[in-house]
Amino acid sequence: MASSASLNDTAIEAIRRGPALEPPPGTEPNFIDPPNNNKLAVAVISVCSTLSILFYLARIYTRIFYMKKARLEDYIGLVALPFLVAGAAKFAAMTISSPGLFVRQWNMRVIDLEGFIYSYIVVTIQYCVTLALVKVAIILEWIHFFVPRATRNTFYWICYGMIVANCCLYLATVLCINYACTPREKIWRRYLPGTCINTVIFNVVITSIHLVFDILMLLVPHRIIWKLSLSSRQRIGISAIFSVGIMTCVCAAGRVASSVNMIYSTDLTYDYSGYLVWGLAECATAGLIFCVPAIPVLFRYRFQLPSIGLRFRDKMGTIFSQHPSTTSSQLPSRPKTNHRSAPPDVAPWIDVDSVANLTELEPVRTRSGEGNDQLQEEGFISHSEGGILRTTEIAITTSENPDIKSPHRRGPHQPWLDCDSSD
Image (cartoon, rainbow, N blue to C red):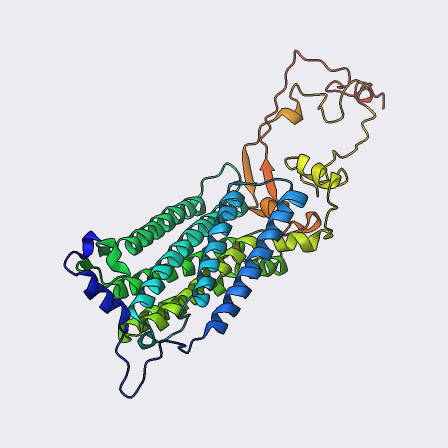
């Protein structure tokens, strides 16, 4: 190892076999079978992994068999799932390898501490990639829900500003974790010569910034939700769905608390274990936020598992077809009117006294329900209770043209007005 040229092999081996931290007075270190709390870590890993996979499967199911279409955020969110599973698997492997999780550092040898810190770095990077992808997918879905099509309003630019800030924040986090020390090997082999940034202060700062960002993500959509043209009951229901982000904020606050404890504690392995538990919970809850819009769809439509084989092939073949909930009975129909005076060759929606076709008029101003139609399309609200979705105003200017004579238009004087009265 070129980076350890100042230490010979004998000195390095002696350091690695020594204790990772001096034990408190009167405490005997236990390197053989140190006390740990692997059961807590395994329980958190099991619950978070199971819920995440189930919710992701629910979203995939609704996209394929109900919505029959996928958008950019679906692919981005789906890419985050392998990183989440890989991070959970690596975290679970730390419970199997010696000495485990939530182990006091004085019950570790330096060689055990090296493996622990290296695994901590790998898991933390996978967490960062997962959160970065999931948050981008969540914000893109906000744009689809709450920004009317072909509109560039304030909320639209706020969302894209948050996407850029989110990507920059997690990119900086990954780079700082990977290159905290020079040489890089010193990150997990602290006895090597070199320099490092203050990783304890860095963890406090970066986790606090992430917490603030999560709180903003929790609050931003509610301003739009309570301006929708919906009933109070519907707004409360949609707001409750988007309030799942409270769990992510709680987990982010737990990471902040763990990082603050590191300032006053030298038992880093115990604090790092809690830090990783909160990180996995934050990734899982962020995934729930991304997947929870699929739940109303499952409840709104009858949930049936498709048969394997031909039906699956047919469903996959129509993935880009029309929305399944839009049936012929729900399509808007033109009102039937009785035009007895109009000739049979004239369409009933054509004004016989006008050269303008009413179906070809361009709207002067269109006001959208700001996301109501998107929410209805995604299954949040039903077609029968969607409220005012769009209001269109059309300006019509009429003028008399003496050159145009209509057989159905009477003259300015009625026949009975031309009669001379002898009375």
